[in-house]
Image (cartoon, rainbow, N blue to C red; front, top):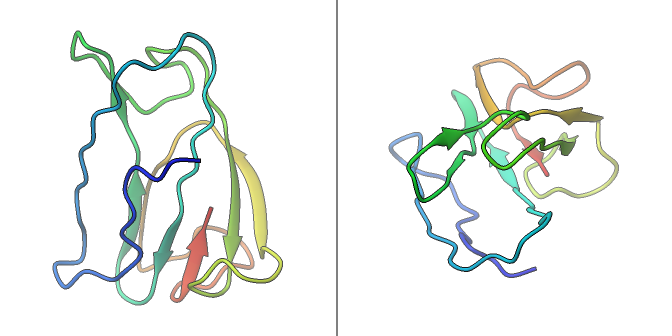
Length: 113
């Protein structure tokens, strides 16, 4: 895997937007890995992509065809040990606020892959 954004740290503003351009992808499916951690306060994450016509998508039925994300949630901020929750999501667009990603996952100090 080639890191595109490598920013594993907190942010005083509470959120950060990263915009990157990936040029000349080959035809067919591609694997993407997104890793995230939350220490305290409000939590959320959104991943979206668009084609050269500017059409935006975050959903499984998006511009480039169906997507599915194998999600693992950990009760720590470093993705270590066994996940507290695993599931498949059709997109990455969450606003957990001060809540938890799901049953068995801490509201604070969790990470996700």
